[in-house]
Amino acid sequence: MHATLALPTGRLIVGDPSALFGDAKPLDLTLPPGEYQVSANASGLELRVAEDEPVRWETAAPGFDAPSGYLCLLDESALTEFTDLGDEPVDEYELLTERLREHPGEPVEYSGLVVFPIRADRVLALRAGCDRTGRCTRITAQF
Image (cartoon, rainbow, N blue to C red; front, side, top):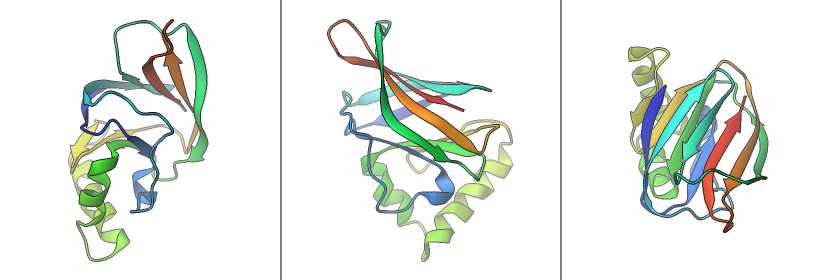
């Protein structure tokens, strides 16, 4: 599964879309603004920030629950747009859920989010891969 993620500010938020609210915080990484390829398989997800291969990996964030069975990525600037779609916090997720039902088993791009179905109820860890210069070239989520 593949999708393209727009990061106009370079501030990446990763989480379960059912728990995504206005107080969500971006990872403690600043990536170059741009559009990036994201791919996923049964064991994890990879955001490709640059072509250089990582030589060192570090924890970008601890694991978290994903009870909806979905994992979303978005730029910090898209959070406001997503959380303002409905009158109540549940409304945004209901609108997104309708779109997910229309495309079962596929990644969905919606209101600045890229959402992937995952076959797990927990993300084990988010890791950042860095090249020889210390520049982040990959972000991975392990299921």
